[in-house]
Length: 633
Image (cartoon, rainbow, N blue to C red; front, side, top):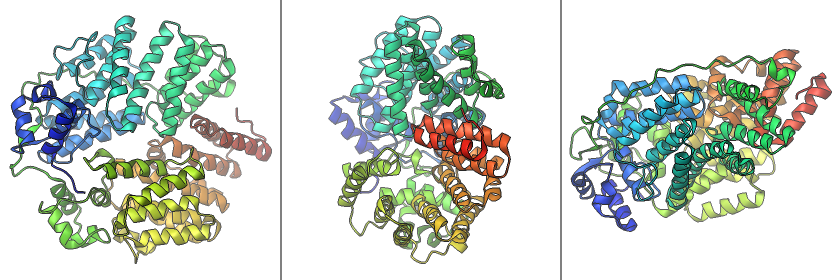
């Protein structure tokens, strides 16, 4: 199924929810604008589409048609800012948000609202204590769409994702300002709303985790320590399952505080230690915030090694002030304008900007004729083809959530589960693979490639894996030669296959393994790739390369892999960074660099435990003691 018409999607969602146009449009756009969107006489910006669909309770976020290139740039930059904020890289997030000011938020009040929210979150994460200012910022942002909102009674409203996030932010600031009852009222209404909202389950889990952070703080304030521990620990575990880094550090620290107040001091210290070292490894000031908190509250006396770790400085960011939004639009536009950027036209613009031919982009995915029709808007692309084309252009598909069929939705869910297998049994993997295969045909070359690749999760030998991986790659690139990788533009699945071929060769042919990984890093340096796409694949490249070099006893070469730029790249994926450090610290020790080896071993053990991989931490501690007589606490 191709990409559907946004107006029809909104109308269907509204009718299914039993809403009038007046009810659906409230706080987002005028009734006239909604009517024009539904009948196809006006287009709709992705952020407005997202707000309308959230109001209707539909499991969809973004429809990829834009009012123009600036509209797309604002949309994608907000996604990039969210990535940096989620990985505690606050300065980079702040720089990304400043770009929206230069574009005047694409004249869209909803982009401006999200911009204000993310700036407020930067203040929160940087440790800013001006809670009146942060409260005013969140409130001003919320009033853009809800000027008359009553925080004690908004349960009847239909809320967008950003409005939910703003309400959670407001609740936290109210708690800091001593208004516990109103904080509780907002939390109660938000959790009730989320329980009944038809939101993508990963987004819902994330929002519930953000709510849980505030609600746990409220419970700690009223000294309901047992419930605070239960709430924090439940959502911490859920974030581990979902590999969601962003709320995990805060939930882990709150779990530590919960254990402390329920008398389990040893367990409390472990959770604190894991939070501290994981945050310190990515140079996040949250490490300093947590250590300062436990010292000021006299919870623990940190061990000698942790006490001597440097502080990560807290950066002060200028507080943004809300402006008058009367000159900004509600995100509707003339559907027949020459500036409208369809997904096909976006692909065309990105392709021509990179000097890429039709043949080079569509190779193995579709015919040159089909791509040409997609670009000139005479053909709507299949959703999975759209993703692959964007990926080959260096853009992450994660910024887009397409309006698709139930089949496509189910395939997405299965693909995610098969990507995050750490906590799955072989029986569960087999079941998911069977379900995935039942939804596709042999003509679906992109999906067949993914299925064949995922089948390697159950392969019994490196030789079998390599054979299956080459079979998977041949669905789109039958004549691929790793030596000339810079001549190709590759999708996420294709790069994942190459990652795994290099990894499987580590015990069979070390030189081939090194060739694959070296060429993959060459690909990263040669091609223009966005950070969101880079983060989805290349932290794994670095981890697998490090593991391979360690296996081959190339310790000095492995130690040299941890450069400043590679550290910056690994910060965006803490779980993968932990795997990288597991081998990196051992290589340092083998090179007799014992001081940095000890530090990175502490990081590695804590990140493994953060993600409930305690056995890995125990193994590493035993290695360091038995091989180097170094104690890792």
